[in-house]
Length: 267
Image (cartoon, rainbow, N blue to C red):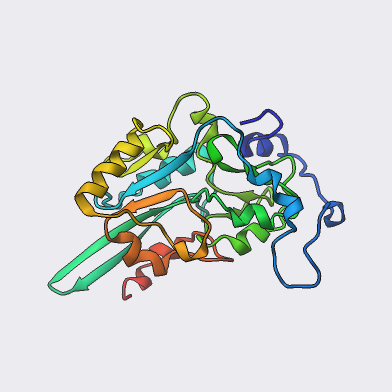
């Protein structure tokens, strides 16, 4: 992560006594007033959509056949990134399928898809959202002023606005760990080894080997909502992505504790 960017944890520590207030009038670019489109002009986001030319292409593989819904990935993520109660950077969404007596519960671990054509970058009016090493979609907390337009356009509900800092928060691939040769916190925490993260450009990487094995065993891997044409960098093996897709948050939504409400069991 470049030195010019402040991590969310650093930002909150520095802002514990007083938070800066950024006027909307300071935004350099404004949406096209001739339409209701939330996206900025291409000139405003073109450079931020380009990742550093480091030869890496970071991505995710989720083997839902192995996930048994322990929520360990969520807990480690919240602890690693100081995520407040009621908010999530990643969430495991589950659904009961089948009919009695043949029923099962399937689990879908979800987080930011780190899209190639990221709509959140296109919509950010202050220019905080951008691509970092390996194509990671990150937030520059020295710039983000909490417009929330990124939440409005994310097709996967993967962004929320921090209730204290009033800034956008999302998965950043634990860049503070990966830059030091470690995996994102959720990956080593997963007891069933359902999560894989790594360089898709490296044919010998664990993620590529796991994806090849899963595809050989279970057929073509799936991606979530490909019709959105965001080119996400997350692939799934197993039936959960199809079964649970309708329960995954959409544009204008974020992960919520309601996903675990017993009142939803009747679905």
